[in-house]
Image (cartoon, rainbow, N blue to C red):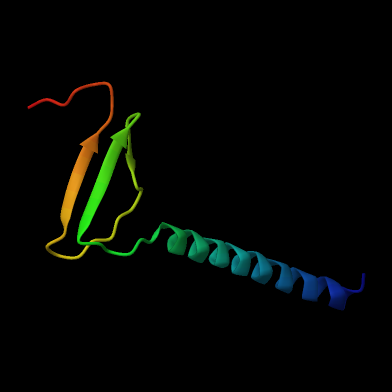
Length: 74
């Protein structure tokens, strides 16, 4: 490879990697976004909550459902 080719490759490669990382991040954010609803549910199962993210508007009723084996304390 010539010096010019090496220079071009050393500039383009990081730019391409950064672009792919940014696109992957944008796809991840849009996959987690959910439309807001008048009623929403959060489920607790196997010590984890689902969905991971929930976008709700003011006044939305959110219901928590515990399906774990360990009861909650009052």
